[in-house]
Image 1 (cartoon, one colour):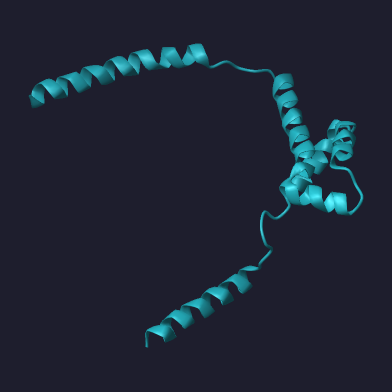
Image 2 (cartoon, one colour; image 1 turned 90 degrees about the vertical axis):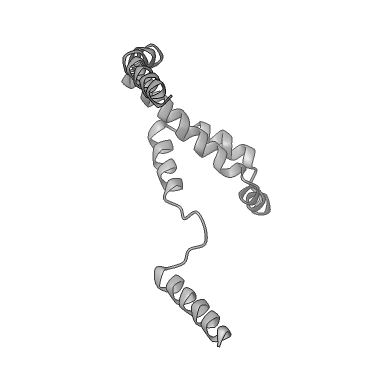
Amino acid sequence: MKAFLRRFICRFLAVSLVALPYAAQTQAALIGVDEALAAQRQAERGKLTGFPRARRRAEAARRAGRCPRRGAERANALTDDEVQQLAGRIDSLPAGADISAAALLLVLIVILLLFMLDRR
């Protein structure tokens, strides 16, 4: 039984090594530089138009007297260089609360000390 299973696995792997690269070639295709840049520009424009649609940002814009829909229209009117610059600035924004490494370390030490004192 072991010999049969071993032969079967070896044959299966040999056939896979020969057949799979040809199957991958039929699905993969190269794209041109223009197509890649167009896709990148489209993704950056999507990021820029989707940024004000978040619930908190939309509420803050409404409270400030701005319309999020009008902001999306203005974003569509920007040039590609301006869109790229703004998308880069969006990517560099902090994702959560801004806390320094020293403050985080201090909080962790306090929590550990509390747990250690609680066990005594």
